[in-house]
Figure 1: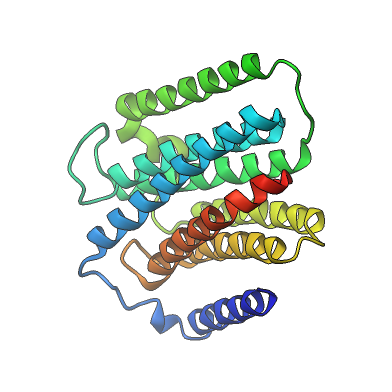
Figure 2: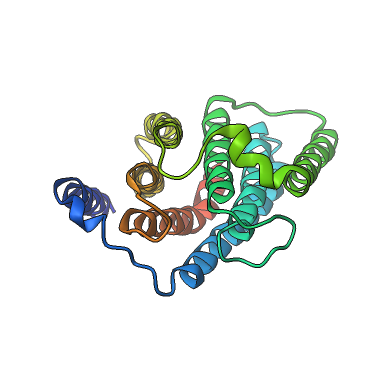
Length: 258
């Protein structure tokens, strides 16, 4: 597994080197079929997020470890933002929110930021609780209220989001925000790396998840627009990262070290 991890890192670095050294690669739009591709990828990401949230809630009930409750809530809330990212993407039919590329970018950023913060917080907070049932009810209620609030906000203020947050297109502010989110994942990855230093394959699979996520954010910062090369890479990396985490979640939870 260590060899696979370093092969992945080398491949990602080579791809990014190509993008940086040859900006013309970025200038080639990969437009045909992008909306279908994006809908499929983001649908998979949101679905895996829900599955992971449910798994972490279930393990919290068995172990009473508070960090599982944090992870479960984080994945559920991030999945809600990912679903809105999907629904608000330009070209999608109007549902709970009017589709707009700028609004969709906002939901992508928030989804990644919420999950990164949850992962980092869960890595730093490890203790068992006594009143497990009460904490479980509180976790469900707070998560449900957050998701309900997210969709209510999207329904009421969706068209105003770009003006409210000033994150539009490929602006410098958007790039800075993408790099900040990537930094959160990098720090979280280092914390998990230290914690699982002697965990064999689990260590490298976790590092693969964080590496793919960090590179996804780097590509979002480099992206010239929704149908350009880096944006495709960013979504592919995110889907792969979630798939890796889904594969290792059961092993992590059995070891009770998430």
